[in-house]
Structure formats: C-alpha cells, structure tokens
Length: 89
Image (cartoon, rainbow, N blue to C red; front, side, top):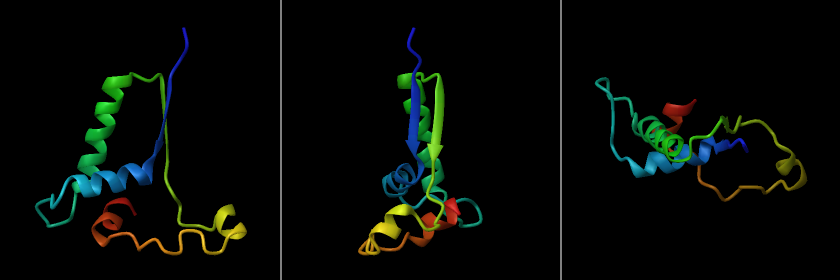
C-alpha cells in the first residue's frame, strides 16, 4: 500500500489563517488568530487525507539562493503584518 506524505508551506498557511480568522486575541490582548486558524486548517487536512507522514517548512528570514540570483526577489511584497509576526517569530 502506498504511503502518503503531507508537505506544508508553513508561512503560506499562517498567512491564510491570519486573514481568514480576524481579531482573535488572548486575555492579554496578544493576537492568536493565525495560530488558531493554522491549527484548525491542519486538523481538517489531517482528518481529510490521513497522511502517514507530515513535514512543514517555514521561512527563516535568512538569505536564499533566489535572492542571490535575483536581488529584487519579492521586493514589492509588503512587510509581514505585525499581528502575524507576533505569532510566528
């Protein structure tokens, strides 16, 4: 029987969750919408596909081979929203 592996683009899923769930904060006022949404999306994916293995990747913020080859890579992308960076850094 073939085994299934689930590969997750962690930052993409965090962004999606951040914008899908608005204005969710803990009792101290810290935003939690991205974390909440990420976990719920992941749980749904796991239930739907029942993978044998799961791996997730997140950007590190370090230089990449893409930027070395093309200095303007993602230059027009706006900075990460503060509420999101508080949740994943």
